[in-house]
Length: 223
Image (cartoon, rainbow, N blue to C red; front, side, top):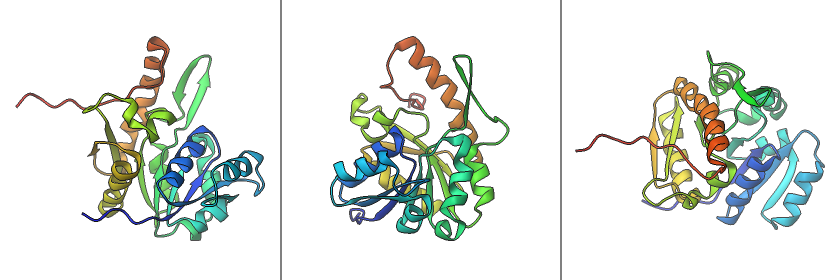
């Protein structure tokens, strides 16, 4: 299998997740544009300065137009707004890797804004010509881009989406560029509900174990 060719990638969102993913993608040789609401977002400007000549910044629309593949790393409560600003025409026909979660914090316990329908499903409905793939949303940003922090043989990532070819591409990105050992396809975009429901569990594990460096894995029965 030939190595993945280097690409132009748009990363929407300038938080820890967006910056970590953007940096990793630059490190493995891609051209990356970090997108935010204003073109001159100081965090994005600083990131592009620090990450060298393949790192760029712009608006959501700039990044979506620039990228052959798009990562949604925005706050899940506002992802649909951000994607509308990115522009349907800039997302049409492209693979959108959705790593966001729509979380509401009441007291100290984060809850999903909706359990009936996942954020990824709502994105797919709003942008029917975009190939939405859900993944990475249930590990910390450190683990997303550096699964070698986890025990060898345990570095498994789960994905969901309607488009089979899009999922194969995302699987290769996860393995070749990010270093995940195994990628398990849970089927169509409805499976994103289950992936997003892992997030309250993630917070509980974080609270009790006191670390963000862990993942979840499907353990098959003994042969």
